[in-house]
Amino acid sequence: MELTLEEEVIKALSELGLTEKESYVYLLLLLKGPLRASEILEGVKVHQPQLYNILKNLIRKGFVKVVNGRPRLYAANDPEVIIERKESELKKYKELLKELIKRRSWERKAGVWITRGREGLIRNSIELIKHSKNELYLELPSSLATYLLNSVVKAVNRGVRAYLLFFPKVEEDALRKLSAISRNLNVKEKRIGEFFLLISDMETCTYAPKRYFTSRVNDDMYAIIFNEKEMPFFFMHRFFEAWRRGRPVISEELSPSLYPRKFLSHRMAVDEILRLREKGFRVEVEVKGKLIREERSVKVRGEVSSLMVTSEVVNFTLTVGKKEVRIGGYGSEVEDLEAEEITIVKVF
Image 1 (cartoon, rainbow, N blue to C red):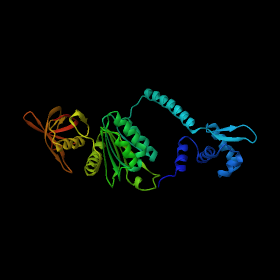
Image 2 (spheres, rainbow, N blue to C red):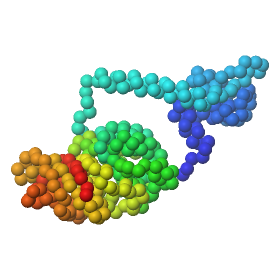
Image 3 (spheres, one colour):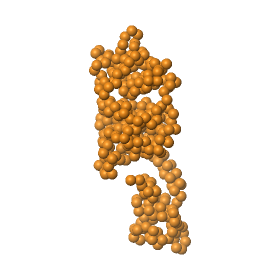
Image 4 (cartoon, helix red, strand yellow):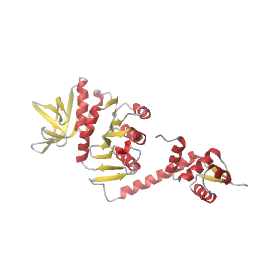
């Protein structure tokens, strides 16, 4: 259910540090004021002693000022000035925290982390998006687009490739924002989603159950953050299958000028190679990885001669000199080489 304008404003004021009753008093003064205390009591359902405590807090927090005279009047301060002051304070706190982080004596190690509540999911997702360097894969309900798209757009603008899979559809506001991007972005939609999923650089991923986005009751919402190699590749298998079935909404126009381009996801490299070959291009690729039978690190380069994509097996074959080398992804068993990094070097 969508919030009314008043409910949206009350929610915004709570983010600025006001209680619900303080928010209603400030909103009344903003729309009607300056007002006497007796007039405020007529507009807001609070007792007189409680009102004076509320006004005292609003004055202390910088939202309300007293107009001296008889009788005493209370007036709302300009919300734009309040927000600018808050932004200045937040900027100062941000710099202090950045300095504190530089001094810490630990780094986050591989492991599993749990975050609780909708706000926890959103904040952790924004942090993950912010630290993405190469590629970003996101399956999300349309209802979360408002909270995450600004961070996604910033990531794309700094060169991160983003693949967004919305369910049940891409809303008009999100589409307008994303349509302005011409490079490093692909968007699809599907009617039924499986879960919330965010994968960053095939190193870290966040998962949250679907039921929290299809039910109004989500007080016990949780998300799991996997900060290790195994789970991003496990979830990529599911994402890739869903991506193939999704309806294209925004598709990056592929042309030789885009390359070279590096992929950390073997499956999504295959997806792009497929699209290029369907357009009639020949594709030259460089692969860093290890030979499966010898467990030896190698780097090979050649032209893609064939691809195989089924629900269980995804690979491609490179012609390297006079040899054919089959390239698989993480955990490959039937291929010749397990890819760790794939670069589409040249398209012709």
